[in-house]
Image (cartoon, rainbow, N blue to C red; front, top):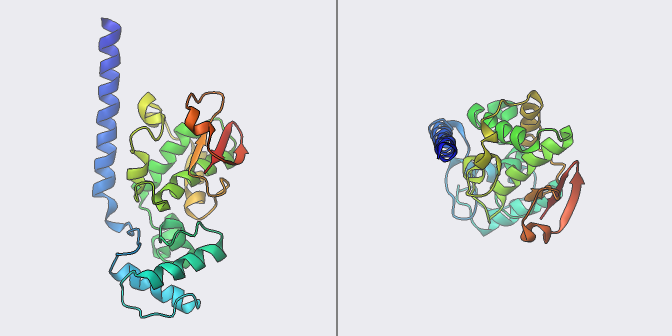
Length: 226
């Protein structure tokens, strides 16, 4: 019975900490740029259209409305820049366009989100080579821009079942210095995962489904895949 009580207390503490972190991220996100896609409107869309126009990718009206012309221009830009050509202007696309650079090396993320990203990298890739830590961060950012996942950092990280460190308490461990550096590097566009949206350790994974995913690259103990 004592073991069960201890387990329940640990589980409650993990849940409470996760709720607290989500609350902090939500309230601290005023400086975060939105993820623009078809249907979006506003100043950020105008900035995207202006940047694309300056680089001869977009010839339409700069009206702040994210329509099919803007989407096609974004896709052309992404293709040339080696980004996933999904027509969604997420963090990596915004960085490549030079939008959000006024917020510093963190790009479109605030300091709280950079810390959250570093915390997950540290927990999920502890003991992995540095390039493998950056690749784990890359997967997280790739998911933000992928239509099958939430379009915010907190949404991706706290998606149920997405990362084991949220279940085993690893996310609450001290953050390694290399994880902070890895977080900044992947935010600035370094993606050793090759655009992957999944990764797993074949020695530890029990999911038959994840083994079916096409592998893009192998770094350390992790396989990175589509």
